[in-house]
Length: 366
Image (cartoon, rainbow, N blue to C red; front, side):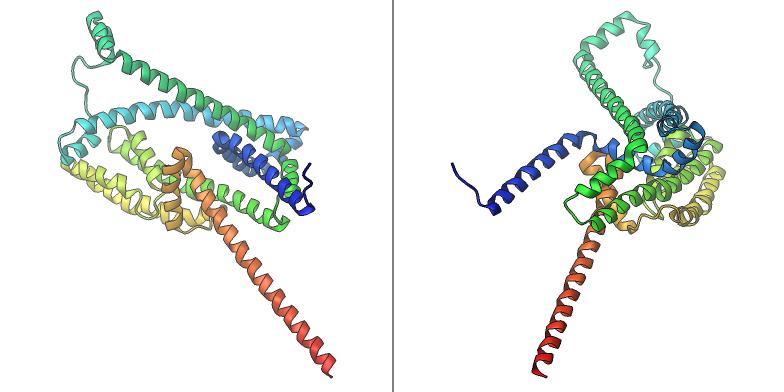
């Protein structure tokens, strides 16, 4: 039987520990996006939990009330709106693909387009021969699409369940989890606290500074599109909200083509109004509201780093990259700052030790 030296035993234990921790991390990878989102929501709603707890008389009841309110007030309306937006986005995409040239595409955006006669779903269902022909021609493709939709719906429902359940657990037991993690993390406690603070700061920054600014710009743009009679105002407003992630000129990528399309369609007055609102109102919202919201949730990332982190996150992680990209960038920045501080401390300790040795040698010579 081979007997390992104490040093080899320590190395073997660390290897086993690293393997087990890595395996656990890989297990949570498919669900890390809703877990991260739930942790941020729990951190931001903890002050509300304290207030509700005084009324309900228990942390479990207060956490349950918060989760129930999220489902009723936020998730249900958002789900209904998303269904409408998906349908409108599909119609908009079909219209753009059917357009001949950029000018016609812009006119389609601002004027809409009616489907061809006989192409609607009710027209197809009215004819058994069309149903049979449709099944024969697209049966396999339809089955594949249906399977993909079912899989995506199952994944979305699982993610939603994990998110809601994690919010409840983090609200109830979050402080205990944090204390355990702080004691058992393989890094210094000060480093753990700084990384956790950067994690929480990223959530507040994305939700408050970036999210509320984009929401405000999207609302203004949506109301303007609706007032000017632009079809699918909700879809275009959502696109404007997403484009606001690009600072300064992001929203212009949406409203400028709309203004040009209005001009091409002969709606000169509407085009002028759209240009004025986009330049003055929407631009002012970005320049004024973003600094105001930043007071309550500062991200501490430059616009360039934030933008590239978002796009890189989207490329690697999909839609969740909107959150995970900036999170990893912010944590990496904090880790580099801590590494520099540690180097400065080590260098200062070396200088102090050298000075102490010099004083000791001088004392011996005297």
